[in-house]
Length: 434
Length: 154
Image 1 (spheres, rainbow over the protein chains, first blue to last red):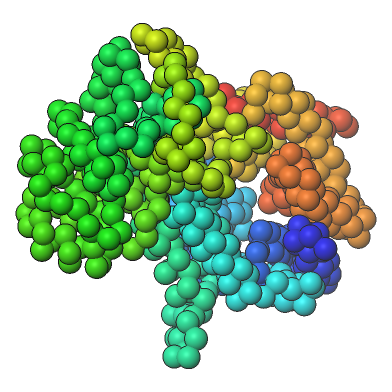
Image 2: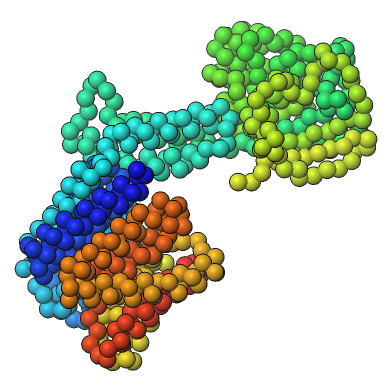
């Protein structure tokens, strides 16, 4: 049975109970019982939620009736004054409703009291009846949600926490298929009753309270959501047979002068240039671009301080693990910022760069770095420049290694631009927009 | 704050327009209160509908409001039948959520006039059929005012 069918049946039972009790016990005011049963039962995602909404409804109704009594004592009955007050209270209720439902309940009760007051009914005389009707209506809803195909709040919370944490793990691995804000909202929907439960009954020391689970998960979600976004631009030049270099000691030049000039312009749009440590060791690239930091990633921390990479002409960042950091700090001193990361995947790299205040990353290679970013689909734009020749060496470094790629035959990239730069064909791709 | 301002603007526009019609027709302000209550309900959950969907809803809401008014009449004259119709309508409105966002939207359109009828019972004295006509007009005005105000504020 689907959750909506369950909720529909719970509502049916709540309304039948409310009509029966209301019409028998309060022939003049049965609608208050029915309305409360509807409000409390409507959208209640679990038993705890129904109890929580019932409490808010009762508290709001008592507050609203008391305010109405004060208003009726000091403001003389008048059609114009009552109408003005009603619209002001309605506005306040609409404004405060997103903060807490109790405010809306209080304002709605005050509006009804003013409406009835303008029609000659005494506010004070109806106080007891109103509160009784609302308590009974709330009880009808709670009984229905408690006994008719009930949804246990703790199980619901644990399920949503598990869903949110699974999505968070996927996003931290580089997936962009999960909307973390949606999970944040879903958790917030089930949070109020369990937070109230924790405030009233406290927590047991042996297991974490569901409210604590929600708070911890929401904090993790917010950390990822609120982290500044880093735009990732992957750029690569390949031979016609898909190689990015040959096996000689000299770096193979694939690009034409026109392509190099175009790539320099693209680099200048970014504030960080990333190459893998193997590329730094083998090619010793100068990685010069105005105002751009040089970045590399190494697990071992095995980098020679005499490399161009550490010549001090630009901000230099090395991302590494704990052991690599110790080794690097001893070897290179203050020639580079050494940032410790706990995983070597694109999401962790980007998160670390965001924490360094960088907002756009130009990824140049080599094969391991390109494979990691392209497999996870962690890029905003991919530039592929194709050189008009073959390398033809199976041992030479290829564009990517074998991996499971996010953009497979069913998830094709979108070709945004094709142009000829000298004898190079340059293709620009983006992810399809959702 | 902006949502509340937009909401109250829709409510005031609906009430004002319907109140003028009630005065012209020589009936009490009950249909104007109904229009204001419907507008307040519509303001709670603004929907991003295209023009065709909006016109469909504009056409359907007054008819559903008329159906709800008949349920309200049944609640006063044949309470058991009225209660059964009310329970059935509200249960159906929730069950329709099984059919996704479209089903949920239809469900909300059904539930809103039913609940409004519970909150603001309609008492229109006058020629037979005048009450029904005013309910239809109140539904149309509430939706049109809310739609226009939300579009202007967007």
